Amino acid sequence: MRAADRLARQALPGKASSVFTTMTRPAWSAPDRATADAINRPLTGQGVSAQSFALAPKVLEADRYVRSRPTVRVLEVHPEVSFAAMAGAPVLPGKRTEEGVAARLDVLRQVGLLPPSVLSGSGYGTDDVLDAVAVAWTAHRYATGAAHSLPEPPETASDGIAAAIWV
Image (cartoon, rainbow, N blue to C red; front, side):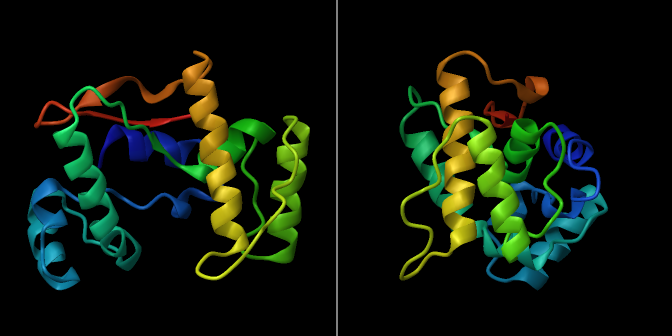
């Protein structure tokens, strides 16, 4: 398990399961979850969750982008870790529940952010919008020098790319 994933889980007591274990590079290119699991398990001792495998197309898209633009910095952010940093503790109600939405909107207000004017629409839900706001909050912190990485300093993957979750 990457240090970033382990530290993100530690930052989310009671919500650690929201951090999906990152697959190994060879597993990302597998055609199906069973193959990804068969590749990943001998390398890490861990299987591949349905959630992690479902992210593969977007992760590979981001990976291609990063590799084709070596001067561009792309940050990895976990919205629940960002919300926990804003609130000073994990936001425990589920992000798709009425209580969870209200709690996250309250946390945004506490850090001086107005609630988004549109919370859902065709092809995206309220949780997607709130996650995007949390990621934007972290991006602003990074741009202003206030963010920190998990781990600090970031690990360097075998391909030379930094591996960290930013908060």
